[in-house]
Length: 293
Ligand code: AMP
Image (cartoon, rainbow, N blue to C red; front, side, top):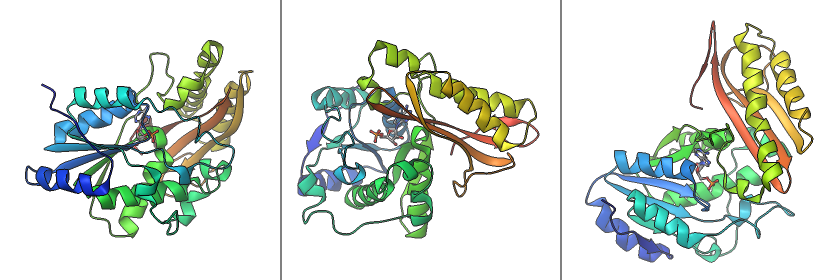
C-alpha cells in the first residue's frame, strides 16, 4: 500500500516533516538528480524496506557540472518522478531550488582531494568537489540514519564514504548494486539522450568490462592485459568515443599494475550527446568475484 508523498521545497518545510518522521524510527535518505529509473527506485525500495521512513531528494546540483556540460539540458520530469516515489512508498520528497541549497552562492566546499582528481575527476575538474559538497549539505539538512547510494557511481560512493569517515559524519552509508537493462547497459538518466543507434552502441561499456573481467578470470594478473582487452572492445564501437578504461585499487582509486585484491574496473565514454560511465567492483584472488564498492 503506498503512503502519501509529501513534498518540501524549503528547508524549513522539510524540518517540520522530519520532526514528525523522526518520532517513528530510523530515517533512510536517497539523494538523486531526478529523471528516476529502476536504479534510483532500487535504492528507494531498500530504504523503505530497512527504515521506518524514507526521504528522497531531487536536486540537479549546479556545482557538479562543468562549463559546457549538460546542466541546462538535464531531464527534469519531476511530476513523473513524484508519482514513482509515491508508488514506492517514500514519505517525503525534498525538491529544493539552487538558492535553497546555496543561499549565499557556492562559498564553502568539501574536497576529498586525493580521490577527486582521479578517474572521472581527471575529465571533469571540480565535479567531485561539487558532489561532496552537495552530499554533505543534504546529509546535514536531512540528517538521516542511513543514506543510500548506487554502485553505478562507484567513485562517488568511495568519495562519500571517505568524506563521512574523515569528517566524522554520523550517517551510515549503504552502497547497493548497479541496476542494468536486459542487454547489460547500466541504467542512467543520461540514457535518455541516446537515439536508437546510440542506445545499441552504448552496451559497449558493459561488454568491454565483461571482456576485461574474462581476461582476469582466465588467470591473467597483469592489469594492463585486462585493460587492453576492454579498450579493444571499446575501440571496435564506432559510435563510442572513449575517455578512459582503468583497473584501480578500490581503496585509493589509483591504477594497479598487478590485478589482486579489491579493484574497480571503471570505464567512461561519450556516445552521442551522452557521457556514460560504468564499472565492476571485483575481488581478485585465486578466483574473480564481483563485490560492492
Ligand atoms: P543520480 O540521480 O544520477 O545522481 O543518481 C542518484 C543515485 O542513484 C546515486 O547514488 C547513483 O549511484 C544511483 N544510481 C544511478 N544509476 C543507478 C543504477 N543503474 N543502479 C543503481 N543505482 C544507480
